[in-house]
Amino acid sequence: MSTPPQSQRTQVAIIGAGPAGLLLGQLLYTAGIDAVIIERQSPEYVLGRIRAGILEQITVDLLQEAGVGQRVAHEGTVHHSIELVFANTRHPIDVTGLTQGKVVTAYGQTEVTRDLMEARQAAGLLSVYEAANVQLHGFEGDRPRVTYEKDGRTHALDCDFIAGCDGFHGICRASVPPGAIREYEKVYPFGWLGILADVPPVSPHAVVYANSERGFALCSMRSLTRSRYYVQCPIDDKVSDWSDERFWDELRRRLDPDLAERIAVGPSIEKSIAPLRSFVAEPMRFGSMFLAGDAAHIVPPTGAKGLNLAASDVKYLSNAFIEHYHEKSEAGIDHYSQQALARVWRAERFSWWLTSLMHRFPDTAGFGQKIQEAELDYLVRSESMSRSLAENYVGLPLDFGMGAGT
Ligand code: FAS
Ligand code: PHB
Image 1 (cartoon, rainbow, N blue to C red):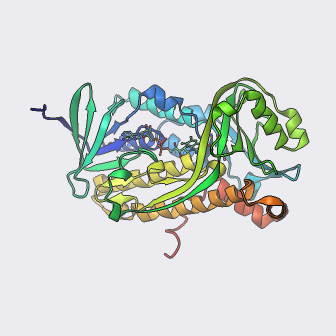
Image 2 (tube, rainbow, N blue to C red):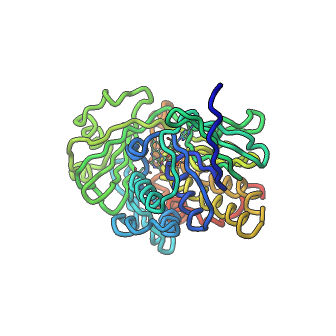
Image 3 (cartoon, helix red, strand yellow):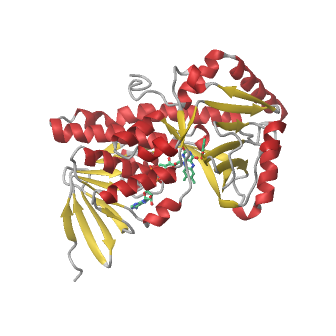
């Protein structure tokens, strides 16, 4: 006879210890709400994933609110502008001037995750890493339970709510009956080959987005001594197809001559290819289970929105739980999905728009390239178009309204 699960209880069971799960855990902790995080991988594996690099001010403010804002305040690099490269010319967009003073901060997702993990550990909060076979039970009702295997035993966690922060390939969205969920998806016919190198960034105060006949390129950073670059590549390319030399050469070919000349090259310390997709699952609540972050939506990284959307979901969800426990109000819980999806779709639109404008598609050809260049030329010369880009890039306000049709 199998050993009955050891059962524990908490208020909120968080599935996933990526930025969404960890930030939610920290915000709930500061509000005196008990949460347990259950993560499939090891801490080292989670920290080893090299991903996002640009934080909206809302995300930086949330890290401060969660009590983990010290390092980003000292080590993050504030950007007041971005640069667009097209037709071999470079054009600054004065993001701060166009948004009455707003900025973005270059600070790697790895460091955000590290700060949150260290804060959680210092507070003695329970995170179960390397949990296998995580299963959700009873979330259609009000007595949800999570079971998982660890150290050869099955464990059970009874809770009031489950927060599905387990990313695109997680178990939470997959546990929703197919008839209860609608999915919207667009898969792009190319990927991003990203490289991390300990060389000074070519543009320490701005992210550079390049449109070229050879495809898209992006110049970013993790610090003043560590750079992050990307080039658009065929979706079926493998990392082994790209030597460092080939990468640096292709990057230079996609930039304007001056910037190309200034690129500092060096050995890659990480190299990976990410597929690009737009994806949204609706709704983001199923009884006592809520989805947040990549578990509910994916954006192409062009607009630097993925991590920032995870943060805003978590802000809405933590507010909802705080209202439930502290004010005995269900208003936040009842409105979470609609409120989060309004912001999600705005970021989906912006990310799709910038991806469509900056990348070479199979049918772009000569006319399409000229149209993209004409669109970019109009954008950099039109204050209203530049302002639209800038206000979306720094992040729309959290209370921008409930969304289309409301
Ligand atoms: P995450 O995927 O980060 O975390 C989910 C966690 O859940 C993981 O630790 C996973 O191990 C765990 N999990 C999964 N299944 C589980 C299960 N069954 N049980 C328990 N735990 C489980 N965004 C940008 O803004 N800019 C970028 O440049 C950028 N680059 C990216 C590159 C790649 C390859 C990917 C995949 C994403 C990238 N993103 C980027 C988006 C990324 O930063 C996400 O938006 C961000 O990681 C979202 O955080 P989470 O929602 O916490 O999901
Ligand atoms: C990054 O620094 O990884 C980065 C920056 C801007 C983007 C995407 C990724 O749009």
